[in-house]
Image (cartoon, rainbow, N blue to C red; front, side, top):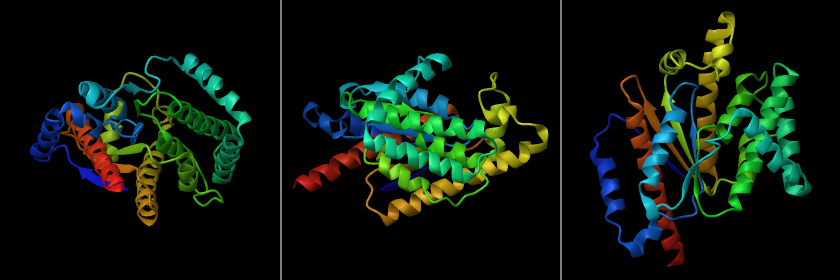
Length: 288
């Protein structure tokens, strides 16, 4: 596991160095960036800029051309209805697989024991996580492309903790995550304060986040819970990944009021490119 903390206000030399290194690779060295990394997942508070940063970073990765390979954004062109139809289409056939059924049971047990506020909440978060597992397994069987996700597994587990009554469950969320597989993933944690995320969310023209649909009485408490859940999950992830030999990458990008979406996307891009180069070096060392 590699953990990096990246600041958008840091000296630009590091980012330019990585860019120059990528651009300077010879065609025969292009495989340095075409590793087994398949998923780049953004994680953070609602409104912190996950969707915007993921779109911008995807365009930059696509600009790397054959060095990176195919880059796609998960569910970019689907509406809510078409997204649910697609989910049903990939979830139902996988129930024939014993391992998938086992994961679904573990997820359901984890959600139920977490003590969701309502049965509707329990169903939503369970369906979301099961759909994500099916999507990841489906993409792993396809061509070697990098999938950018602004709503991935960490965000799915965060949704469970947001309205849970119990933090302790017999099924540990990290164990479920490990069973899904971490070897081909990069997690980008957009680390910013509640005030930054809340203010950015308030100026959005939609009401896609549950934080925007919360009553005024519970508004402040829900934001506090959301922030605590993010921080605790990242702390759990760091601790568990240091304890075991995991090959995925966790990188934190600092987001403050002065950080533009372009700044955040640039730092996220740096983390992805460095991870690809690191993975290449590890593969070379293992071969030698």
